[in-house]
Length: 212
Image 1 (tube, helix red, strand yellow):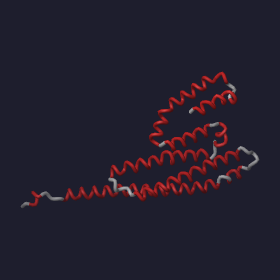
Image 2 (spheres, one colour):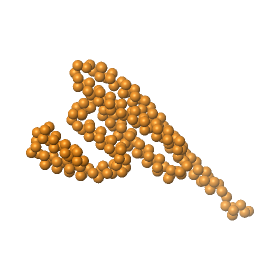
Image 3 (cartoon, helix red, strand yellow):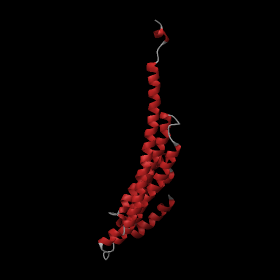
Image 4 (tube, helix red, strand yellow):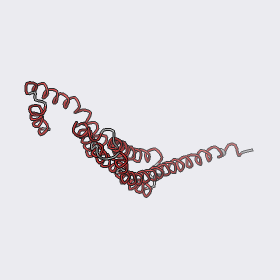
């Protein structure tokens, strides 16, 4: 966008102290943006604007040196990965399966109630699983940078984040079990109907065979 393109000039001049390389940096910036545009358009089309924006913001923040020296080797990376996998990829796969499966096994095979329960367990569970680790990782990194704080105290500072994250992980487990149950029930009902029809066709006698 226009804001980073403008601010990067101040970064090159004041931070890097390399005003002579402004054309090279700007050219690289716009070239990378142009080359990555088809990938981001495809990601937005497949995963949605909000999820793509959140994932890109986390990647951009984590790539900043001032941030990465705090968040590297902490629970921030694990929380970020969890949010991308479950919130970015997992929720999209749930929606895709729930959209495709009724076309394969019939529109009445999927239980809407179980589908809603699945969503309201997985969506808050993802946030409770990932966000405490993100904020706990930031707190952990800030304390690790202070040499006067013992490492045991740093480890204890993340216990609350682990407790909340465990609650979110439990909700994810229950949501995934409900998803599997709903999926297996739909497939079992479909194959039960197919088996009944096939058995009826196989055991039906033709009128010609009834004649002596």
